[in-house]
Length: 358
Image 1 (spheres, rainbow, N blue to C red):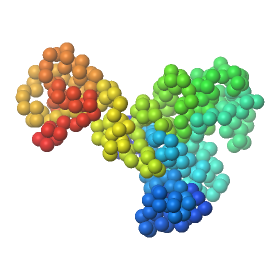
Image 2 (image 1 turned 180 degrees about the horizontal axis):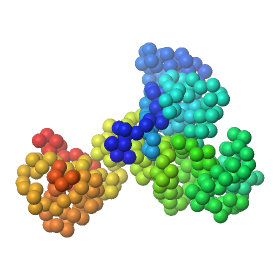
Image 3 (image 1 turned 90 degrees about the vertical axis):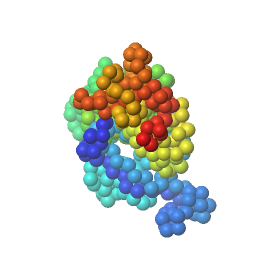
Image 4 (image 1 turned 60 degrees about the vertical axis):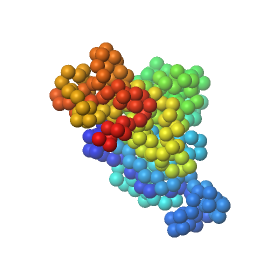
């Protein structure tokens, strides 16, 4: 999702300073956190409570795939369950389409989940005694939708995930990847605007996992859905997400595009996380170019690329041309220059501090 979209597109989920503290004395603990500034370990020691999510604020926009990435215990799965109120926040609020889900009564909350929010877990939990079609239609069955209507919706969802020919099979006859497709179809059957995905592919073989990542991203974009995708794998987050939130110990450390995070990590923790990530297809010309004036030479005869050209393309261009630089042009005007030095720094994920100073 580009910057124009990010600035103009409707916010579907607005998570505002949300905390989740687990324990019998959670209210006292929240008071001590906000009033006395106690840290996570101090809260555990004094109140016997665990801080699962700490002052989290995120926005998810229409059509966006928003990845929340963190290691085990980072709070990512707790956060996603706060977004549809599977668990109650200790403090703060979650707005879904402009409405505070914490203020909804049980009936309104059920309707909001049914109409607007689908969810797929790591353990897809298909009903073994029901066939694929019946599993995909189960959510609508619970809502009281007539059989013919729910089956039509389920068949359409199964077609979208490539399982039309398997609708009368049973879960035991399916591979792990196919079972996850059924879980996704079940979430899509009610045509929600938002899909919550809690590490759905983490237990799958690498090749199947990669295939499903690509299929999920393409399907989500084709259908115009928004998604919140939980993962512990940064490569997966980069492959799928328009933006990524990195969590540690219940705290959101940084939110940004993969390129922004790689080029400008918020702290050493994030820098260590992205250290092994290849920049060749991730970092674009606009992140490594310098102003034409900083180049110090004529730009008229230089080979040209667009600001969205990745480093791999830039290397190929500069190698083929024999030049020491590339002019970055947009709308017919040169907006920057990428030199060999800029390319090398970009491969390392480092900005050109000399150019920035200039």
